[in-house]
Image (cartoon, rainbow, N blue to C red):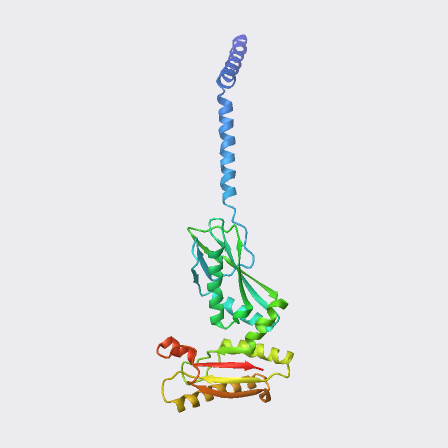
Amino acid sequence: MKNFLIAFTIFLLWSALGIWFYSCKLKGLCFEEQAEAVQATEAKEEVVTKAVPPKIIQNNIKGVIIRENSGEIEFLPALDSVKQSFFDFLNRNQEQELVLTGLYTKQETDSTALARAGKLKQELVSYGLNTDRVLVSSKLSDLIYNEGVFEGGITYSYREIPEERSSRVEKGIANKILYSGFASNDFRPDNSLLGYTIELKNYLEKYPAKKVTIIGHTDNVGESEDNEWIGQQRANSVMRYLVSQGVSGDKITAISRGENEPIDDNRTQEGRRKNRRIEIKIN
């Protein structure tokens, strides 16, 4: 009986060895299973690699949405705080200017990116930033659209105003047109006047001998004498505001041209709006 069990055990081992030899060596089935396991691992690693987020874009402006191959942009409420931060920075740093850089992919053109940056510049100028201190540029990028949409796509940077541009900025300060709520007869200071006042004070510190002339203008609605008076009141209001902000009253003269010097067609609503203005000239 003992000899039988030994012989039976040897038989089972020999059979198992034979089955393994037949399956793995002759048929190669064991290697197919290993190959499938390796392929499964490689496939899993590929998925993980694709899930890695794209490179973070430095100084990407939030509150802006761009669309692939389109120069149009959409503004979100988050842009409000961004506009205020730009406004505050430029007011605190009179020697600096803001550069907006529109990004574009290899499937787009730089003109598309410039159009986007230009639209954002218009929004910032409407908010009160000096147009001469906001520049636009473009840059090729590896940004990735999500179903044709990307939040941001325009970056910002500050730089010191170069010497060759400084004269242009100063010329704009010395010849300024303001529309600070002049759609009515009331005077309401806005960001444009606030920012300009800071620039004016800085300019007069640099050129203390200069004098300021404030000229009030109106449209042609109403009597000419009334418009002359309205223009003078607007000029006086701006003068009082500048003095309240620290500009010496001895340097300022306020006059009116009434309806006599239009810069646009008074027959249109937009033309009349442009004619209701304040001009500030420094000599």
